[in-house]
Image (tube, rainbow over all chains, first blue to last red; front, side, top):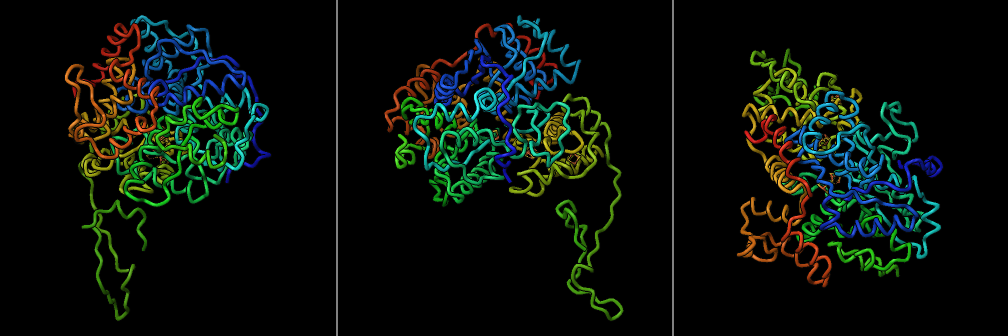
Length: 329
Length: 253
Ligand code: SF4
Ligand code: SF4
Ligand code: SF4
Ligand code: SF4
């Protein structure tokens, strides 16, 4: 069961209104709609994103399988750049990016040898070594704690009335707790975790996205346990059979639970849902036609922006007809 | 008798008669089933040492075989019950290399969802440990080049070269690696998405932004495909990357 309304954490602040923004490669390419709408939402909520200049790819879930040290270096370089820009907090809108940075954070913090070796390698590569390790947050966590549902409600000019949303978090937003620092908000599961972070979302029943979208007037449909089921992720191109099955389960659950739209918070999940949705529909598989939109796009619409402003046309699954039907665009 | 995790028992070691009558009593059904025992002689403990040498493999010894990881695993639950992270850890620790090899066809299928790692009560970084096991297997040549590894390497090449990846190039490059005929322009040798023998679904998807007259999107992605986004000042850093990767033997296999 989802976390009850009363048990939800109130926004705590403390992360900082101005943070280093690590968009990741996808957001500057195929997922530009997420980038554009994220900036809109941040602006509306009175938060400031400081673009991380000259960053490099985090390596996602791919490079780590080939090279441990290489992947550590890629992420340490980004951390060092953030420090150089004067930030202690990095915010990433992508599950893959936040995972990679948080994974590096884990190894750097818990293994002194890794920390020392990486620092000397950074120096060798012409990058400032790390004196302190900046912390990475997923953008959802930042929005929730630095702005929160109240602020979203305040900014909403065109409530998402009647829009039934399936909130899809993907795997790595809350997992594994070693990296994401999540824990159980209701105390039903093991709670004592050495690295848990007060502001992190509930580990098995995340709710920050639905809290924000509900504040904007949308209705969430029941979506557990598919809300954190994997879409096939790093294997979405290399293992098509498994990915197709996983996405089918996700889409069908959303559809059968009455969702009009799936809200996403990761460009990789989003791409993989849209790609396989299309393929499944071509095959004539039933109940897979729910379109997907980034949660920031939906918030943008609620804040009074147009479909063009949040680049809804970029979504290959075409959510415009659904939103039109409800008079939202 | 019900056999727990029956897929782990070799079928030829399960003996079962259609009908069995002992002392005039019919004991057919589950009661007449016998599993032949076996003696293991062919273990190799240096395998475990090699896993422990990998920074990600260090937590393997904490495992107490509760199987929470397997119970959580979507590949085990929704795809193939032969995919069993708990069992892979067990085999790696015992050094049963031929048993691992028998499972090489499913072992690569982990989708890195980290349900296992997240839920493990003993703090084993299960997903990481499994990847460490795979790496040792690859080093020893007991697992063939599998699709996801090919993709990982392909991805890494792009990051290594430019510091960044580009979705379009990754997608079409991968499709081409699969043996599809991707048509390229003669000058810059960049793929033209809607031509050639690429899969139908991809053609249809690629044409959507054109149908929608989504000009901004087309220009941005065309630009990126022509001029791969790069990280500035990458060269010096690249040397260091190369050095550590060489040490890890990335270029060797
Ligand atoms: S997760 Fe993907 S988009 Fe994010 S930086 Fe890594 S490769 Fe780029
Ligand atoms: S759902 Fe898929 S893309 Fe999203 S985090 Fe999980 S594996 Fe990655
Ligand atoms: S959950 Fe952890 S302790 Fe249990 S079998 Fe899996 S790895 Fe071992
Ligand atoms: S990370 Fe891999 S082994 Fe672990 S639960 Fe996911 S698919 Fe299974």
